[in-house]
Image (cartoon, rainbow, N blue to C red; front, side, top):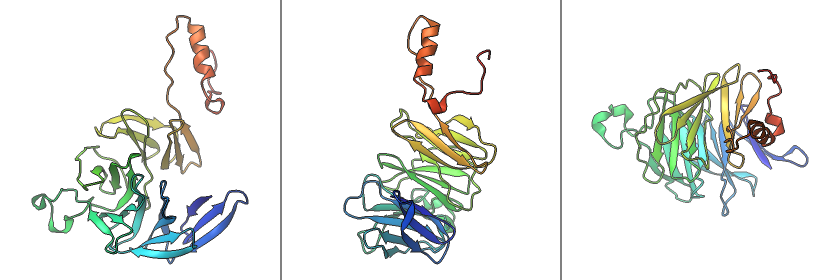
Length: 285
């Protein structure tokens, strides 16, 4: 199965054999984000963020909305389950806050991320316990679940210790973000070092996860890039944009140490997936 959600105020669970919805959840407002835990064995909950400040938890087994998490004061733009602890959920809202929850607890919220790490002298009174100075519309755990990356309309990305909620103070510089919807960036898995892939206009900016350095910019779309997703098994990145294209970005393979250039070229060409071979350039180039 796979799950989709839409501004038509529904979330649909699809049967991949019939390509028809097996279950439809209806909400009162637009659905901005949903996420199904990648590791859960004791629950089958889908977390859903809508234009209602309450986070909805939908149970796949019963086909009903079984619980709400209350704490935000504006629409919830992004939700993400921890890949480390199956009951831990992070949520981002237009109220400038990011909350981390244990859905088993009656009180729910474990802590709220504070960009100033509790130093009230650095924050205006209205900015206390805020993750960003604007709408928080992007969330992503690292693959090991040890860190949480957030993005806000203050043009900043921040890296947090997911266990303590501490801001690691990694400086990514200005990361343009004017989206009023969820911002879908991603983090590599299995790389050394790890990278962040973030939509940036019609390109994709690549940052060092723990250094904040801009490593490179991937250009190929003709219009705004909306989302990125990383495939850890093939070490490939996929990006989709308003130009109607989905692009696959593959890593440059290391050339083997051989003396014969012709053998080297043949080895590299044979190792490239046929779908990604260059069919446009001429041999003379």
